[in-house]
Length: 467
Image (cartoon, rainbow, N blue to C red; front, side, top):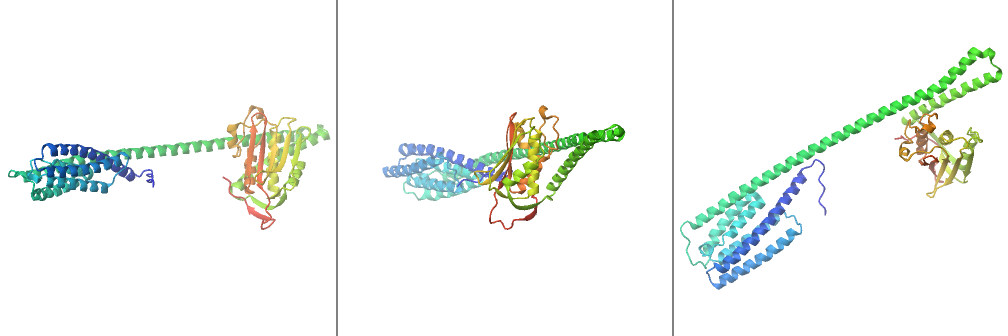
């Protein structure tokens, strides 16, 4: 089972992992020491052990067994195993058993051959694994065993000089103290350096996080400022044109009324009416967006034949077929659950955009057909200016208009597609757009088909919140 990843800002797991790595390195160093001491013990046993041949044979057997243990430990550590404290206690116990056995069978502390280097190895290894407390504890145990086991052997041929045993015990404790202090100091320095590095890394991460948040906040403010600027520019432009037209035509009627014939007066009145209607549409778009964002856009859902509905909307759409030839292709049997008035508003928005951005004589096609996924899809295709790929993601945002020199004189609030998307999503549908720059676009909405198990044919619900 894999170890859990440390959480950001949590240094405890990093420190634990560092300690485990140090422990693994200590065990590898200890293994190297074991092999060196093993080789030295074999040499001492064959060239310094003046006891009987039985003593030499027994010590060789013990050293052979210890060599097998060292081989297993070496293989385990080389394969990447990270030992815990229990591993150190186990190997220390084995090393202690080997050292005391060799001490006993080589003649004890009165033997002519000094195998005490095994005990020094034990003490130093304990210091590396456990620090000063571990090395002192090991030194005390080693000293007791050295005194007891070394005095029980029957192989001794020479009596030790006075104070020999006490001096050896003193050396055990001294080695333990020095090794423990050195290892403890190294570990303390490593821990301090590691924690300092972690703190600095944490501070750096926090600084980067704050910088990222600040950058995001600045970008958001710039985006809001840009939206505000675009909104003001759009409103000024969209209001200026119809208001100027109303002002000019009404002034003409007021000042030149007695000179105008009936046909001219009718044309001026019609122009004022169209300009007022344009202002009304703009205000209605603003009101619709406000209701959508406040979750106040209500829907009256009913079963709707999409094929008949599309034909009705296209027939009602005021367009000069000679300027914008329009083709309609629908497949029968497409029943959906929809609000007729809201869906008509959405389809009219798409038709208005198709006419607005198409050149004179550009073909417009309206297609209603089922999809492979078992849904109903209504598409409006045009041969207009098209949309660049990089502009596609922001098409359905509020106040978004794609400015191009070919469409510089085309008006619009930039709210139509936002309203259309909101209406379609309230019907549990989604929008889709395909476009090729300079060749035209296809805007579609996809709705789920009517389910016979619907609880009722007519319901009124508020719109869902639109992101």
